[in-house]
Length: 147
Image (cartoon, rainbow, N blue to C red; front, side, top):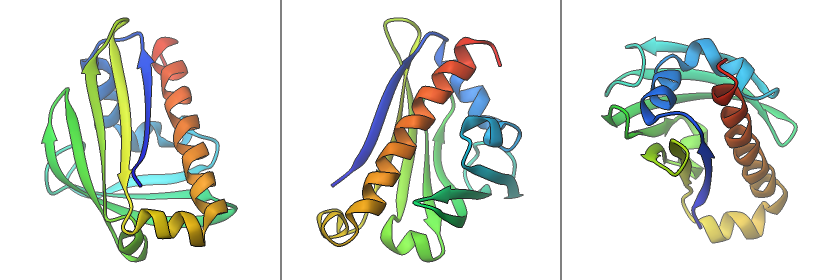
């Protein structure tokens, strides 16, 4: 099982990627369940940078660290999730591609033992899928409104 969500955004790919390069400044406006975000090492979407983020998922506060592993500016940023959550979901990716109105933004998470997770923790998996979809829709609204 892969957790993936895509959304068409009527801005160029460069605009989407630039927004993510400053995620620490935009994180709380991206979703109401986002609490805090800052770069522990490095800055922006560059390989080796580590982002710290806090958000509410399935009713619980999660404190996460993301290591940027592979970045192609204006195209994609791949990351590893560090710590305990990384045992269940070791990696993810943000991808931006040219689309009909400007861009297609895709967020993907690659859970370990995805089918087993879905069977053992269906409410948590559903909450993650809903949260990811809301992030895509919120990103569309933010960028298309010029925020």
